[in-house]
Image 1 (cartoon, rainbow over the protein chains, first blue to last red):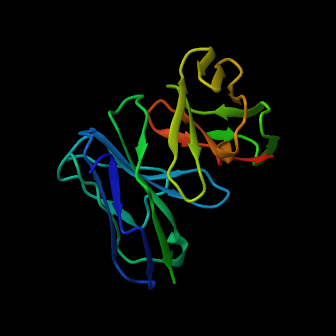
Image 2 (cartoon, rainbow over the protein chains, first blue to last red):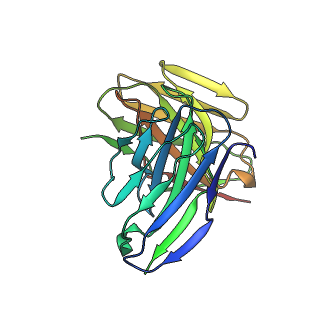
Image 3 (cartoon, chains in turn yellow, purple):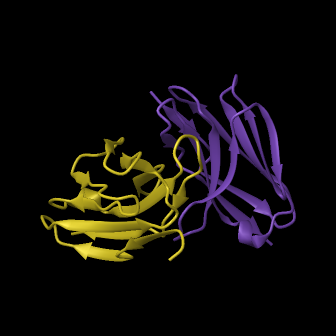
Length: 112
Length: 109
């Protein structure tokens, strides 16, 4: 693989179900990010990780959790999905600091 | 609060020039980014400005004025493939990106 991959590409989920969105990068970037993108709004940061073993909360963290067990993987978990979490989710990575962020292809999630 | 403003939509003609403006108010400043996003795809990096002035990269140029909290992206010799959304983002004092809602650029033949 080259760059960042996300899985699944799309998912329809019943409200109340648990869901994990997967993200893997092979660029050995220290920093990784999860965003959601909704129509008419800018990308909003959910959680981030500056380096393996550390995570932080972004602008809209409620209802989501992350882990960073190693450099390559940064899964995002919705413990109990709600319809307001219907969105397109992008994972991104960077060298950190002021470096540009590289984005995965996104996961389109619909919660009914 | 933190705020990034850019026009919602712009229309331009193939072969012409278009300027997309972005104004910002953020807590701290560690640079301004422009990304391009085609419909249904991920954002891709276009440019980064941290000092005042113009950065040119082929048909695309980006300008920054930190004192005015203002940037623009200039696209020359427009092609149909330039139809996309253009996202302005500012890196704040915590090195987090604050994103504008994006400008949808429609190119007409």
